[in-house]
Length: 167
Image (cartoon, rainbow, N blue to C red):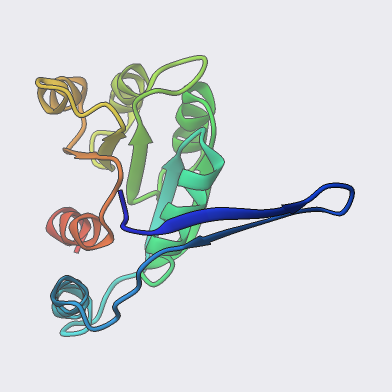
């Protein structure tokens, strides 16, 4: 799907070596557009550093979000369950932004959002889901989310959304 190659060299009794390639073109038009959008959003003005809660039970997704947000975050909180997300929000009223995974254990993201809204009406909550089905955005907004973004998350789209709601 990425126009790469994958192959293996194997010798009985010695082992195997696996190889793969992925094309990389740093001068592509898309890369230039993304970099231009990001710089337009955040380099033309002083950016307030945000306290961000990443509510995500998938560790690689959480790590990716952390990397995407490091330039605009003052402090990053992390939770892996809906219940933990609610408690972190309750104990840290200075959180500016919650990136809420919809499919989390114990309490799902929509119910966690409903419960957070009972004690914090001001925090910005952006729902994130791998299931971009028709009606997901409406369900997220009905639950109290400010916005909805589908996975895989584009850094430029996420930063533009954050700028819209938080900056």
